[in-house]
Length: 471
Image 1 (cartoon, rainbow, N blue to C red):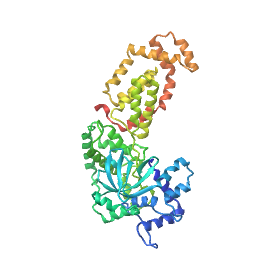
Image 2 (cartoon, rainbow, N blue to C red; image 1 turned 180 degrees about the vertical axis):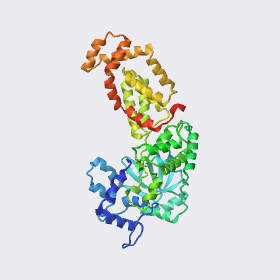
Image 3 (cartoon, one colour; image 1 turned 120 degrees about the vertical axis):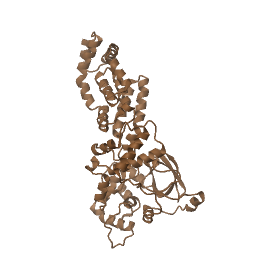
Image 4 (tube, rainbow, N blue to C red; image 1 turned 120 degrees about the horizontal axis):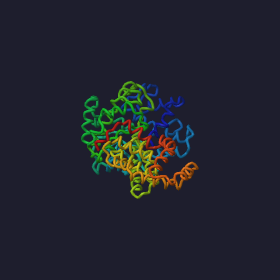
């Protein structure tokens, strides 16, 4: 499920005056208020559960849930393939689930206790918070071909279920809703407390210590991450800080490290000014608007975290090794496009730029090759391979190889301009051909570079100011 799927439609009901009476009725029903009473505001700790209940469990006067009504109504006239997710979401089950197995970064095996049904759900962030035998409230829905968690963030219930207890709990006709989860919060049944994250100085100190533990303390700091939040307009709905930081590590963090990172990133982000909040921190915004009620209070637990770019990069490298240059270049372009989309990076990202530059050398494109190799060395001035390729380019052997690639390209030229140029340049020396071809193709390559995926990704990456030279 794509980020924002729930938010895209819940705003339709919360901001539409004709549903105002229905929403007020929902508040009274959820909080067991008298029909003639008024719910002035919703306490922030109950709001996510109310919003989830409103979306999936509350019934409008027409007898439909909001997600059913939105699918049938399709008020924004979206195509059916975009609306299918709302049809899928109608088939869901809510209740207490036991975590039976965790696949870090990938998914969870869950047991729905009141039905005895087992599910494998696709999930990322929760896999770093949950452990085997944890019990939580959760909503499971089948989106397309696989199951996902589709509700508000939950909490760990401090119970342990043996096999006899699990059998006793099975009651397939029983219906749970987020109202049950809210009751746990009201009664404070030993739920795991949130960590104390008030002291920003301590958060930053702990963050820097963890970065050192990851072996990347020389590449970035808590202060730099705060600068990202303040100055960079991240396009992803969920901040990609985890992706960026984990991407810089030599090895995937162990479970305790990952738990610590998630907690510290959350704490740092909540306490830091952010560009998307016009210089305010989420904590300041929460305090300012804590009395308000609206769609911004709901946050789905489903976030699609970036991670496809290494697949493209690996395919590109494989093609490069096999001298399949057109395919390699195509995969490198996909790599940079995906990196920009995911707003992520990797420990050896400078090598991706260099390898893409090598591809262009095989097509005789000195301009593009130099741009990419220069970026590679700008990111890591100690990168030996990048230095070697640039040195070879400036040697006599490099001129011979470039001239050979240029002749190969010109023999297959299709434009009238290049065909005319080739007739004149057939008998040029290697050095003269290299200079002449560079000059005649310069304007085209300059225009090409402005819109190149590698250039666009580099413009994003340089904002991060990561020091890759310590790799």
